[in-house]
Image 1: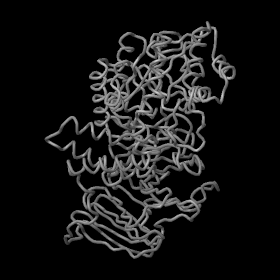
Image 2: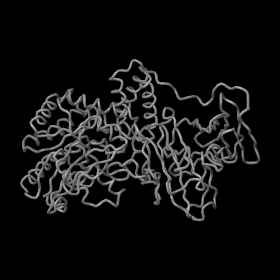
Image 3: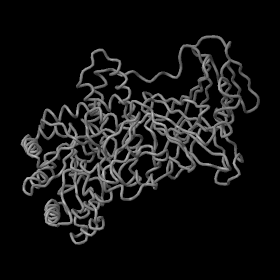
Image 4: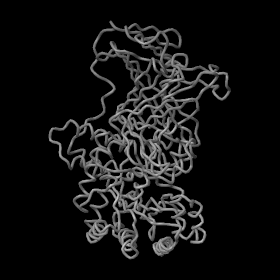
Length: 622
């Protein structure tokens, strides 16, 4: 027997739906779902953010009343997610905590319940966010099977038919119920008339077995039935009768002895069955943040794309830092920040909605007065006592009691090498010149500390040009600067070397009137393969959790920046939600920090064993 469970995701923040269309969505999509449950006593799951429930309650309180009654009579099950549909691995731990608490408050106020299960927002998972759900009191998580399974080829395929336990950090875990992208896409095709009932049912029947299995029938949007959000020109024209088709399907399944319809939380009762309840990690070093559906849906979708994800995320980080420091902190301030961090403002948002978000952001900024990014130049003082500066040909050598830095003046002040005297006689990071590897696939110069802009149809634009460097003492740092002209305007680059600590920084100011459409990668950090041992090479960062996550590179190559298509330029990334990435081995490591209040960059790792050594880089995307 195949036990089938369904979760319909309700989201009035849907990026391409105008606010004036919200009543239509409630009428055409949400009411038919409740009627379906009541008319046929269907044990369906309904998930919505606190924000979506608040809006529905304002526009159509009868709907919320009906949902409440269905849940309290046991006919329907409400599944939680948080106050807003924000991307957990991209936001600070404290914001994740507030988002869960504010969501529970809404559920309690409007539905008088606390849901057992939570659907991971946008199915964007990291081990760090598990504790936020367990701390909120959830008994289990719903997360996609397809992408974690692709990253774990060692998993038996039957793992998808039973609940497991997903590992968090510091020994924490939660029961895990699988959602499945391919099956819910097949369900959508049936509802949209692309598959007949006779064509769809065999897709379910192939999962039948002698033993009991549980299987996710549906786990996605409700707004796409009898309504079209209007994102794509390829959306089918049939927008009526789709709930009737769904009704026919559920009626057929109710009468078929091969299937049993169950509530999502009923899956938890299968945790004690053989093959269930195993402790598993969903993430890998190659896929640190698994996300639902096809590869174009990855963490960068909500970080550095859209109309201005980078600007909006950076503004949210500024607001977050101010809220942390505020002595007059109010709950509604955190609620507003969670709202502004909603995922739907970062994808296919309409012009009207985008304007509304900008107005709301501006109003909140005026209220809390966020600090501006730290200026590149500070008060100048005299003295080179802690620095030894020497230039010979292309190279500028800068030495302090704790570090030695060599810059290449013929290549825009890229880092030729940097050594922490307290750690090693060898540089930790460096430029690997052409010919360093014998493998022709790695026959290039691998610089450190530069930027690369790629615009479709144009040559790469970089700062790898000859320039006359200037240097001066600014507070406790020696600042070496150069200006680079590009087709889009001038770029000012500064290298800031600390006088006492083994630290240096790179700051860019892009003096461009407009931001070109393309990919901008900055802050390349190339490890010295002769110093770090690949056997225990790791990277470590925060992805929305209180604790950092550690990933070991292993023996297989991976590239977070591998392009998925001409429109999607990376496959995965790191949230870097504490502003730090650590990379190293069991003997040495370095900390690379980024000021998220200046630019909310994402981190990416490129790694490959080469010539009995390895190539490993950390790169940031803007």
